[in-house]
Amino acid sequence: MPSPASTTAWQHLLSHREQLGSPDLKDWFLTDPQRASRHSISAAGITLDFSKQPVTQKTMGLLVDLADAMHVPDWANRMFAGEKINFTEQRAVLHTALRNRANRPIVVDGVDVMPDVNRVLQQIGRFTEAVRDGTWRGYTGETITDIVNIGIGGSDLGPVMACAALKPFGHPRLRTHFVSNVDGTHLSETLGLINPARTLFIVCSKTFTTQETLTNAQSARRWLIENLGSDTAVANHFVAVSTNTQAVAAFGIDTQNMFEFWDWVGGRYSLWSAVGLSLALQIGMENFNQMLTGANAMDEHFRTAPMAQNLPVILALLGIWQRNFLHAETHAILPYSQALARFPAYLQQLDMESNGKRIDRDGKVVDYPTAPIIWGEPGTNGQHAFYQLIHQGTSVVPADFICVLQTEYPANDHQAKLLANCLAQTEALLRGKDAAEVEQELRRAGVAPAQIASLAPHRIFPGNRPTNTLFLERLDPQSLGALIAAYEHKVFVQGIIWNINSFDQWGVELGKQLANRILSEFDEGTANAGHDSSTRQAIDRVAGFRKNTKSVA
View 1 (cartoon, rainbow, N blue to C red):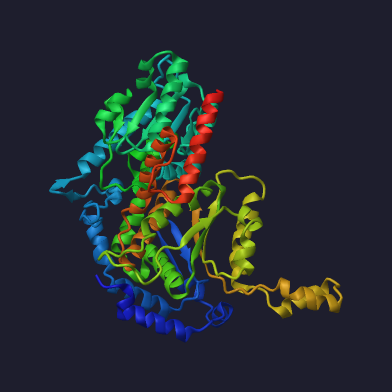
View 2: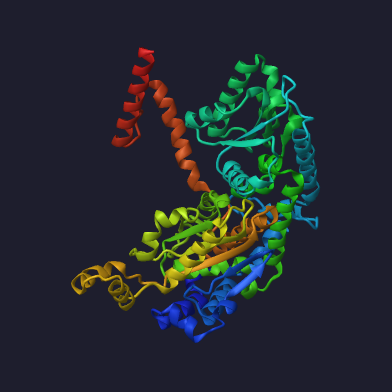
């Protein structure tokens, strides 16, 4: 595959960028009353308004040309067909198969994967019903009231985000907790909230060897046995999401209660699989299936719509424009819904672990920027924290505002004020406030002319700050599914355009390898050769502290 920067389409975009100069978006709206409708698109219950981006119809046409030059539709077809596009791990990329509601055959290595997908979905459904209706009971015969998901990365971030987003759809008896950090504080604080006789632990680890997950799981197991008095209690209180039958059985989990997923399910795309068991338990299988349906609706739109009318493609192309041609280094995700508080963190992994790469598919170092830094916080909290930088800082920060029109918790005028703030922020970022407006405002406030001159520069807003606004009528399982799928496909398209593999994560491995080495050196009491002096000094400090602490104890 060619470098995108070598394509004619890329060169045309560079020329176009120079021709545009520094446009005033306010003027574009004045000269084109139809700009908002011309730069909006709807799919699967989501509407994207990108009219406050510094793009023209020509810009979008050239960006579509770039996507065409990098064969985005062909790569999408290959993904949906089950080809092994994750070539560094020789794996298909088939999170879309998990929500293939038409149940069309998808063949990998000569085998249709859909029977296995449906089998596990049915297993999740049966188990979910048993826990929710009280059929499944703990070791002492009590019903389950608390679910603790033990996982990390994709086995944590997706379920955490979705469970928070869909809390109004939860079972009144069940509370869901998540433990990911190997810091003992995380587990200890969670155990302090629950009754062992009424708790179900879900251990999520494909290999059942993930250090953080297994450390937390073993500690939770000891706690359960100490409190219930028998190691046979484990079978009533632990289930596994894994593929390692032997390790699961050795832990004490009945392998009938092991929920399978497959190597073609990447961690950050695994919410749709058995990794979503905690969510299914919380919201019920019918709602879980609705989430799959929403994601599938976005899949079908992405798979069939022309690129110029394709919502995830447009999201991706706007990001390419900002990152590669306008040189934005970060991208803010700003959901005006407290229920989506964990959505920015979820997208951090989805985007940065997928596309935070410096090597292209041909093994060459790229000569263009790839993934931006993703960050954000729900409105209106962010307004009183970091919006100052977005409005008046020296860096332009493109932002996605996510606007949920209907709340599950109507309370007086809260929602109206929330939505007013969301819309006001995008307008303020567009319009800004010039010197004349500021001076007039200060005069009306009775500020003395001498003070106006000194105060005015501090109150000027440059405007022209780019935003997207995504509208959801309601945050329910179906719309959440569509929203997540839209961003999944956005990340995929950007990876194809950047000519990188979005589906491996080798950058995660080196630190893990070194951590295991350092851990053994703690036990030895001293650092071995091969470390830099800073790391050796740090290892010796920790080892010495641990030794002294043990001797005092």
